[in-house]
Image: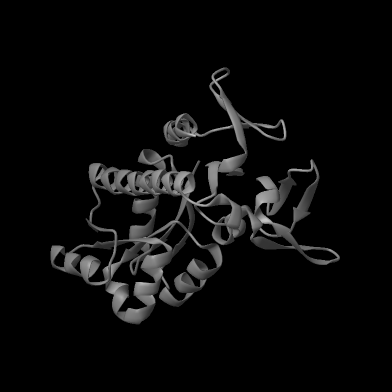
Length: 247
C-alpha cells in the first residue's frame, strides 16, 4: 500500500531534490504534485486529500493559523527549512515533524517511518475498538451510495468489501451483488467507520467483521465471507493476523 504526499516549497529549485529523495528512499510514498504557489497548494490539498504534505516554513506565514491547525487534523504536515530556528513552527502549528535543508536521506527515512508507525498504531486501535464495541448498532447504520439513477442507502453491515477501479469504486455486498460508483476508494474510506473498515491493500478496503479466514499460501491472503480472496500488504499483515487470533 502506498501513501500519498504533496511537496510545497517557496523555492522551485528545492522541489526536485525532495522528490528525488522520496522516490529513491521511500517506495511507500507516492508524490501527487509539487507546488511553489501556496494558494494552488491549498486548493490541491483540499481536492487530492494527500496523506502527508512537505511544506516550506517560509510559506507558513501566508496561511491562516486556524487553517493550518485544520490541515494537521486531515494530513501529516512536515515542515522544511534551511534554518534550524524555524523548527519551532512545526510544534507551534502541530506539525508532525521538521526537516532541515538540505534534507538528509536518513532524516527523511526517519520521518516516513514515524508516519508508518502512527498508521499501524491507528490500525491496532481500530481493531481493538472493533473487538470491544457493539457491532449491531454500527452495522445498522447506513451509507449513501450515488448511482446513475439516484442515491441509495445501504446498511453498513451489508458491505463486505470495496475495490478501486481507476477513479471508480466497486462495492460488494453480502448478497453477492455489487455496485459501481463514481466515488473514489479514498472517499469511502473517509465516510465509513474506521473502527470497522480498513484498507488492507492499495486497491481494497475490507469490512473487518466479514473476514472468514487467513490462508497461509501464495504469500498469504484473506478469504472473505463472499468467497473472494484478498491479498494483504506486508505492512498490514501482522496487525490483521493479531485481529484474527483475538476474534
